[in-house]
Length: 231
Image 1 (cartoon, rainbow, N blue to C red):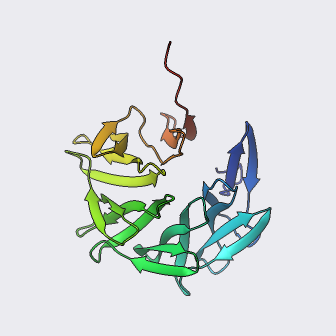
Image 2: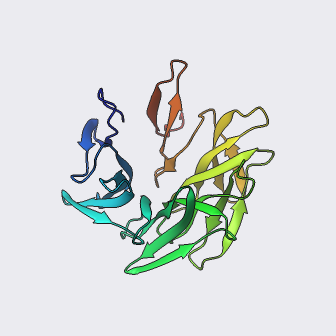
């Protein structure tokens, strides 16, 4: 969120309580991007060197993580055993990475600009890539084997995959032919569109998180939880 001074701060929402997150080395930007079942939080911050750096918070302790020296690092996902995913790069030229244990693998979708946003218990990751002329993005799924599959909502101008749970359900958003944003889920080979403009993540209980922008330009986060069926 942005405070009254224009500073970007991360936060965690847990049991109806908000807790602000500011990495100690951050200048004016901290963003929390994910949390796993053990309560480890991941995100990124901008340091005094003007590079973006990843971070983890475990047991109340902050730890900086840079996947590749000299490049900015964004950590966007963590699974239940602590494996990470995200992307690295400078000046918009990015490549994805997965950190499984102590092993880090960098990859792109066929050499294109690649951003990665989610990882599940099977180490399957999702994200999007941007081919020339850099006017549209396309979603993808990367299996733990490294196999890549493009994933585009039918008829969309652009598709971004942002989250995946342990059942393999993918979330994200797409732009339709009128350039209007719609959230979506994808499971077992089928897309389902949402009235929400964006679905940034999904947990194993089927709850969604995301954000929307109101008419006054204010961006608001949301949590959508499944309701029990009527008996």
